[in-house]
Image 1 (cartoon, rainbow, N blue to C red):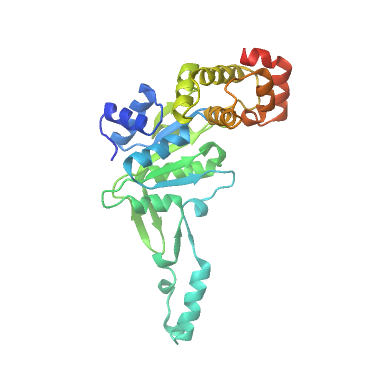
Image 2: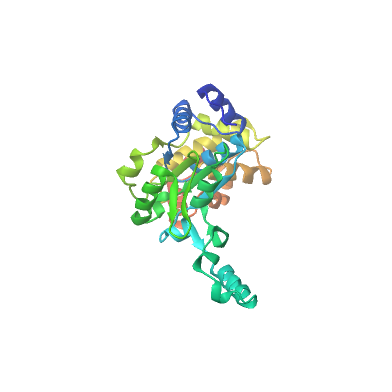
Length: 292
């Protein structure tokens, strides 16, 4: 169960190895207590998605994830009819000689409906349960889907013409994330508790590395965090996130090398940078400056 105090929530987050500052902890607390969605923006890899995973773990509830993408429509996000199952039922009705008496209701009940993430979250939010619904990278979806989501998040219910209205007894815990590749409409943001997650400071990132990669030397963790801060200050196409920092630390551990040298950084740049132009830019700037 998620604690209902800020102090308790902060301790619970820490127990899951999630380093949340006081401002983020307060934002999460308010969203939970007010029953409002939490809208998290920030660069890729700063830990937005992890908030939903950690809250689900703390609450002991299901994490229901809707990964957004261009062209996402209501059918893939809410529900679809299982046409194969419906055809099988029609054949069975005919085989039993019940075809002439069959009506649309025989194949248009809830049994023939495939629930997608949004409907699954609504149906799961019953009997005192509050599943965690993660709507990830909303900025990748089209504005038409955003408009539909606006209505759904207001009432947490959906009307299916053939079945009726399905409602959540209480709002699920909703986390929306955006990498800000486009602006999300103000009307949606107004219905949410908003928080911007920035890159961690080098000191905090070193602490994250020390917690997430057991056995790593404190000096190496500090060197990695300092190097990542320098990379993010450069004009790169895709600055690395905390996930890449942890990958870098794990890579050095696997290589059994406790020092971040220019030569080692050069050999492992592909762990933290995913575009050739970025790698070339870092090499041109000089790896000595990166790890010095």
